[in-house]
Length: 271
Image (cartoon, rainbow, N blue to C red; front, side, top):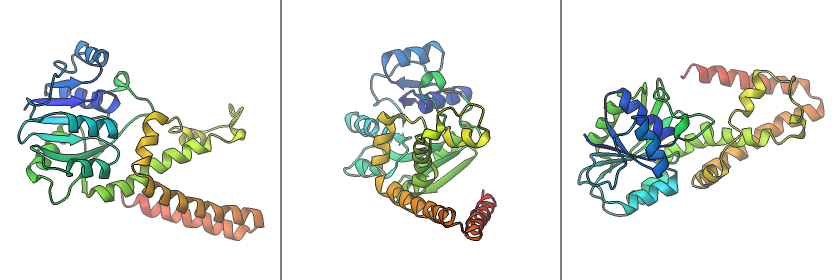
């Protein structure tokens, strides 16, 4: 099977390294210097000149770039083209807007780091992680089975199948909302001079605050309705805590905290 990875950043680079570890050879598409670094490290075989020769094309690019890449290239008849973007609805709508000669599958690995770029990629990034596969009535079942088998060899321990709509709603809460909250949290003036006053809580809350706005702004906007809904819900819940504190209602605050603790305990049993 001839494999091409389009985009050799943190995720694409880690896929390339995990493929190499699993005994696969892949070619790459990225800026010349990135491909050069990947070839020098023996992560990819060569820089790809096109897509038509490949049986599997993994598109690990930001959403707009992924859409442009899929739209601008010719693919082998029956090839599997799988994007690895953090939103699925926008990609799915684009791909299915016209007839295609390839088999499209939307994917999203639940793994990452606070840093980006090929230099931060690693072969074990996906070990024990989940891979989401978005599917609908037009998704080729054999393509999904082939990808599931491959993802298992890359270290993924769980495959979750769902619709693109379900994925985007869930990811708005589990990932995108968390990044926005962390980003807003560090804007408090009280954060100045924090050294010596922090433990694990501060590190946990601020770890993902440093989002790259050039990438994440567009990603958020492609899923803005779901994120806005989650933000409204969070703001309403926070106002309940504020009201209990301002009014001096200790019993109400204890009730809210107990409610959250029990909710967390319930969620922990569902892992």
